[in-house]
Image (tube, rainbow, N blue to C red):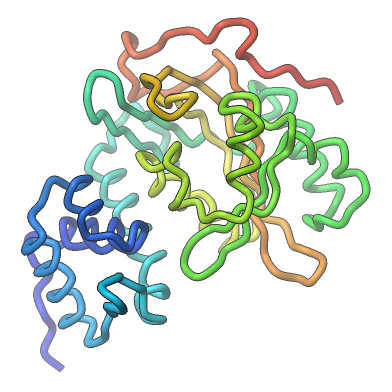
Amino acid sequence: MTEKPVPTVFSEMLRSFTTLARSLNLSQTVDELKLTRQTIRRHINELEQRLETKLFILKNRQYQLTEAGADALAGAERLLVESETWLSSGSAFPKGLTHASQAIDDTRWMYSQQHPLNAVWKSGAPMLREGLRLWTQSKASLSHNELSIIRPYCMIYRPYNGDWLCVEVGDQSSYASWFGRDMAQNTLGRHLSENNAYSAIYDYLVHAYEVVINQGGLWYDHVSASVPRQPGQPPQSVHYQRLVAAFAFPDGEPAAMVLISRTNNIDIPSMPPERFSPLADNDIMKFAA
């Protein structure tokens, strides 16, 4: 079989595919990527030709993912994250650990750095240390009684149709206390790709969830981003430590539990110092087991 050369615009094609797959709206994809409709359609058509399968169907003038498209989405997003990580890699970052940088403009940005898991015991937030202890003690089962200590602070996602469905938002979670409980409740039952608060860092978030589900393990990182607290408000800088853990629902299906602790104690070598604006004391997470 003759090998097909990788096109020079491969990453652009992947971004057109993943963005359209998340929004299922061509106009929204055009606005987000600043490309023409013809360019996005051309990217999708070439991917479909090379994969020899349809990624989308049009039904009542609305894009829908095919089964093959849904299956391809996770791999495409992983390729984007890994390629961006490779392009920005350098000696300032520990080998084998993922970092990401995305500066859209002076007010919108995200920087992150994965850390070794054993660093949780040395410099991790108390909430994350407790989450790590309970993950081990519960044998990664969501039905374990002692998880009640940490459940009010977590969010839980289930992989579903090539996306991540939010099935639980703790009323003391970082999401609820940052965005408000009304917005937290509105997140329940929705896919992560539908959450505008996370749209700029969706690929990075998904990469961590996929890793823990595929490996049955954990992911620990530090993140700094600019995120509006309410729709229409200007972005506000927020810094946090995050622990993502693979769990199982009582029926055996996989789940990703996410614990986020807002803190000024972050170590992200890629972030320019001028980006760091300390959180106010009342925005720093408090936790006592």
